[in-house]
Length: 320
Image 1 (cartoon, rainbow, N blue to C red):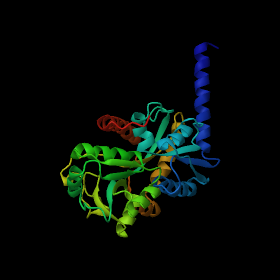
Image 2: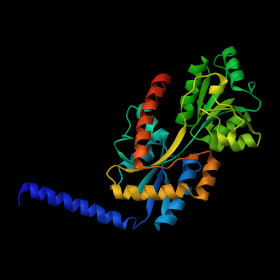
Image 3: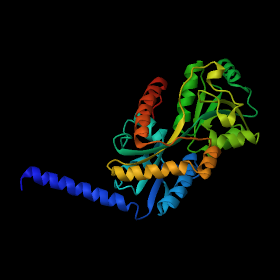
Image 4: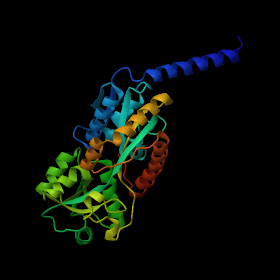
């Protein structure tokens, strides 16, 4: 047999093996990695999706939290996992877009090391303040910050929040102090007690505190007002530049996962996102569900990597 024929035979054998594996998928439990701690919006979403996938796929889908390094520890773990569809990542804009610019020594490539599966959805950030803080609106906050350079402090418990504080400083030409937190719970406690005055945070953990009257909402970061918070103005309405900087969630598999497996998971995820249970969960965390094809997510992620590179260059935020 010639070398060419041997190569063709090997290629056909490999393709057949992939098809056989895909046809049987899944025949064992699936592990969904969340690169953030328990109780985070990512964790809440992942557990809801895992429950729906378990029911549809007929196999347990377990959630494993691997927090640290802005989501990089969990993402790197999935990137190194077997590309068979049994290890998935519930990623966000942090580890899967922003980290490529924030970290100089990232142990994975968010685009090259992963197979996009499906975009879960997007949610805005919200600017919230302590009830006793002087400024009750964003224009009032800007005026107060100009009058007291460096005196007003902002909490930030995630990458997107940290960049938003820096964007606000540049858009409004103000000087404020950023206080970094490792989790939203600690930050929210300090905000409500008055240890910090303001914070950017995901709408999920913020809106219940706003509704309970424990903190005050000043602005949302979406281009238009959020439908679930129509009384809260946008940053742009306050006269500042408009920036499209939202939190997004998406599912990824290790690069090299067979296309039929990716397509099967994608199809089931889209079905799960359309269920009343996931719609209700999405509303609870402030997410607008998305869905779509792996190709849709690939395009979106690549655009987001470029967008974050511009934002990081603009703000000068670096982590290492």
